[in-house]
Image (cartoon, rainbow, N blue to C red; front, top):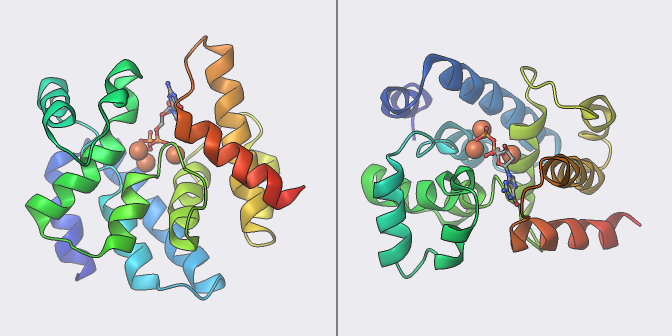
Length: 188
Ligand code: DGI
Ligand code: FE
Ligand code: FE
Ligand code: FE
């Protein structure tokens, strides 16, 4: 999809700050896709729409999670912050008409990750974590790995996120753990 057209679709659904974040994720993801010889057009579209559902009404998302076969009800016992990724993939398909399974997968898994992520999944997961506006503790060890070892960069992001969640006494979504273990075995 044309970049300007896609950005114009997503903009009304985002705050100004989130829109700026989205554009930085786009630049980061396209740069990584080019570096790893992945499809830059798919990376661009996935990045533009990755936070499409970030500000959807919680009741609307709850109803979708209850009623849609493709959304596991287990999401409901976890933090609602996780919902926008899988719900976003569904709504981007339904409302925007994006049908490419690789793009939808990258949107779906951008928050938690999962085991056996595709290269595009990893690029969006990582770009969302390291875009230049981010300032997470430990991020300075992740950024230099992005173009050296994609699995290691994703592993470090996943580890930092899990440490953050543990420090906040938050439960860890199963796919977040599956992503961590899978990447652990890949980088050890
Ligand atoms: O949407 P963004 O803010 O750009 O970033 P994101 O989609 O990576 O979501 C960020 C939030 O999701 C962040 O506050 C950490 C949280 N998160 C990621 N994995 C888990 C999680 N929260 C819980 N409770 N459990 C998880 O497994
Ligand atoms: Fe997100
Ligand atoms: Fe993320
Ligand atoms: Fe994001």
